[in-house]
Amino acid sequence: MFQRSTSSIDSNSNIKQKRSEEKPKKLIQADFFTRLPLPQTVVLSIIECLVSVELYNEQVFAFPSHSHRSVRLAQQGSMLAVILLFNTQTMKDDSSMMRQIVDKFFHDSWIVPLYNGSEIDLSIEWSAEFPAAMESLNDVINGTNVEKLNYDNMKIILACIDEIKRYLAQNTLTELFLLDHGSSLMDFLRDTNVALRWQILHQKSYLCSKIPNSNSTMIVDDDDILSLILLLSQLEVETRESYRRLLQNRNNIWSKSRDSGVEKMTNLSKHFFGNEILKTVEKSEGLGRWFASMAEEIRFLKYDSSVTGGDIQLCIEALDEIKQLDLIDSNAQVMSILDETQIN
Image (cartoon, rainbow, N blue to C red; front, side, top):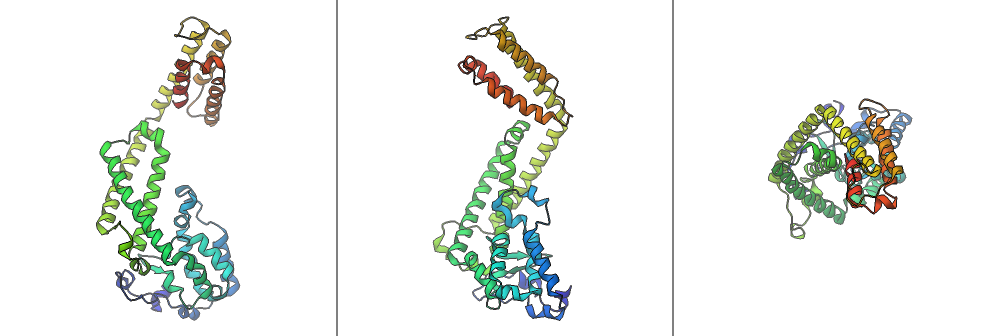
């Protein structure tokens, strides 16, 4: 509201301007912020807090990868970009603080969204007037790095479009697929969202408009962006529905997997006792008792128990240890049964 009333932000049409040969003008005039002076000790405390503490802890779960930290901290970075204007001395003289800010929040991005679709270009907002800020940002916005960031992003965008089409065409999002590859699928969705966000923010930026087209064999246009948005939306909906079905059937899946594990351990116990001899399995009463005991351990696992996860891990580790025995390790049939039990 303060920025609007002082005309520090231009109209929405100027904010979303197309690529231009002329360098765009600043959207925010720093001298407007002197009209509302704030205690500098308070402003510095806020800046130090934003730099040193992650306020939105839930974002860690959404974007756990260190390479996605600029997205994880995007909301905090937006606040910091504005609050710094209430303490311009930091951007003018404090190279150490500005280096820390750029490395943490803007190491791969110079377009900062503010609110309501509004955004600022730090390469323009910090130019000339704030030498310490520009010195820290120069490593990000130098021509070679901008070209590399843009090229890498386009490469990811085009690869993601092909990968999503493959996911959707093959109907791979089954319950078994989610159980085996759910983690890699979520990593892929994160990578795609991060790449899409970067492209939407930076594709019309002044620095990207200066990249020579002749140096790149890949072009991502508006049709590619729209296609990726639609495909990604469809994949996310199908992923959500698959997980919903998986959660609805989790009790049945748990019971079947537990019963299957009990059956395998019981059969191995019988074989080693010599009651039902598998081909090439040598009789061993000690192993027979061990597998019978493991069958009971698996049988008493409870789905709703708070300690079940630890018990399952102990069972898996016990199976890993028993595999080291020569009598087990030398028998491919027994090893296969043990591997299936651990996977289930």
